[in-house]
Image (cartoon, rainbow, N blue to C red; front, side, top):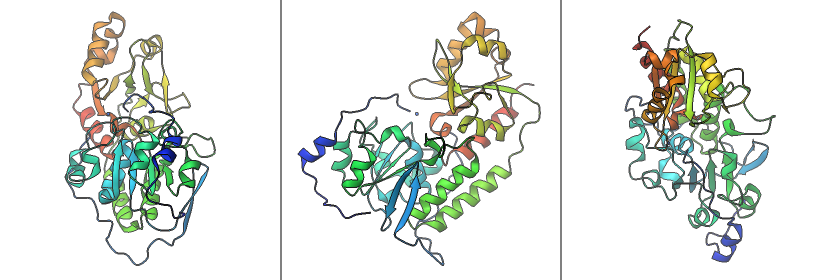
Length: 341
């Protein structure tokens, strides 16, 4: 990436600020408390810089491993932590909830433990941290109204990288998202940071854990209920919810919708009458709130899953593509095993 002056004049930073983007705070399946592999675990070969990547249609070049990283969203911060790169994070923003127990030690003492913004940060706040990379969970995090648009950041010598699972252009958007896509991002981040050994070890561990899961074979249907009251917002057919449900052995009642998430009228939910409801637990819309809503409405109270109390819960940070997805599969499979037939 081009060299840039570290100290940015405030006036310049202000020209990049389009205002603070307010968004729904997008907030555990815990694995074993295994320390993340070290990013310095030496290997026979390292990253060959300069490294140029096509990231969601934007060409990004790294002349060396980034040293000062701003992460936006839990998925990006947790990928860094899982790779042993927490010391590279100079600012974490828009976290969706606490890190899982398995990453608590890795987060301790890092910027992830003390986020600088609860929402998408403005460009002034982002640039004040003097990053050489902004690693974003969503493309929408990198706009003039957010942390700064990618072209302007590049002109200032700040690289940007978006989680490939969140790419929106048809040529780049995973359709459907698979665990191979999730593991490919881990590998690519490892390449960016000259941490291929750590990435390989993490992917191997996650593949082994996933391979050990036996999907439920009862043919149960499920609704992945994320948020919404008048109209529920649910997991659709090509994103992380679908990927996780496939691995668990559940048939998604909204699986025919070619999108990552979708709005689904309650009438459609009632018609589908799912056997199981997966409840996304978030600070702004808890699983308990959703249960109360489902059981207090006579129409939804008659659903099979509600009558039989067939609820599974998953923390919000595990519902977006990232290092928590495999743990979510394990956790949901264990919950499903304990449900009444």
